[in-house]
Image (cartoon, rainbow, N blue to C red):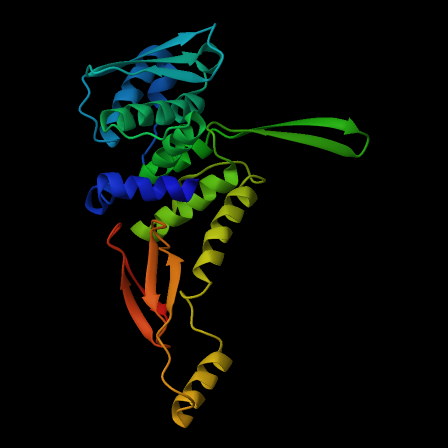
Amino acid sequence: MVNKAIHYIYRSLGARYVKEFAETFNFDSNYLYQDSIIGAQYLAKKIANHYHLPVKAVVVTFSSSLKQPGIVELSSSDDFFVELQIQYQSDPKSIAAILAHEVAHIFLHKRNMRFPEEHDNEVLTDTVAAYFGFGPTILNAVTQNKRRVFANTVETKVHHFGYLSLQEFGYILAKRDAVYGRKSSRWASIPENFPSAVRSGASLYYNELGSRPLIPRPWSQSFLHSLSQLKNIGPPMDTKSIEFSCPCCSQRLRIPELFKKLSVHCQNCESRFPCFS
């Protein structure tokens, strides 16, 4: 679903526009400690600017009756209203993480981008937030609660915002870092026991990069192919094709099976990379 969302982002916005979001959002919490209402609205405007949104104002309020962490009122106006749970009013990191997601809803609304299913649409929103530079902002709001269950057993509960798992956030950040040549982890300050989940998502992406046809064939296959060519065994066979997903945007690609190194160009995300056909 995350790969479907990334593919949709590139197809809808174009590679050149997506690559304008190379900068990671720099969150400064100092102004939120002075006045949470004014600070939250200033932060929301700053987040909207990072998304390149031409909005006049993002009004932020806090409510004690809200069931979810945050909600945004979408309209055709250039003014937007975001409501946050009052329990986060004194928590700058949580405010930033929630606003990154809610303002992403505004971004998608302005561009008429959405999936039919509500859950899939929330995954798209989180993917946009993480891929456009708010991954560390969301991860920095991760919290943990430890509770002793038995004498030698401690139960740890992890809480983070969004509809994606920490592993999925790690997967998206690894893909983002590969495109922009950045290292998102240097922006994150999540507790020491959380990077393992984020790293496992990155490892999943690196494993994908280590699969055919992105890596050379086993030497035995190349050797047998060369031997058959030398012996000219049998009539020439029709060239087969190899189908795979673009490692950047998951566009389905096809290359001929030529037993050669090829330079592949993905028209969806405009990335170029070597393949071993």
